[in-house]
Length: 164
Image (cartoon, rainbow, N blue to C red; front, side, top):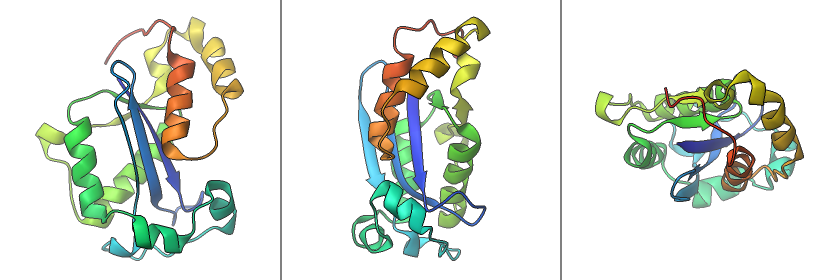
């Protein structure tokens, strides 16, 4: 199982992914990268100053250091193909992953497809309050890899219901 976290340019329908981080619960393998918004096929120009402060990332840093959107998609497909990918906010994280692929003009080939699923769906409802308490207590600095690791730490030791 993979825990993924996506940071974005804001919480708006015009927002887009700016940083992705993931960690494997089993092996502790991980990755993190920034995304260059200027390489999207569609205009990615929405920028929230609140998001900039929260993530401590400027648009200039993303342009200078971020991956091309096509390279970001390839990197995700290579690492996450066929894996169970979980998020504590799959509606946003899944949407931003979708925005990334659309911005690159790509679809995921069937053999490389991964879907971001809701973390809580993999735990019996009896464990939901414990998981929520652990997540609420976790320090998350709003940097994708650090947040993914905090979520992974909160999950470890709880019985997984299934690997759908």
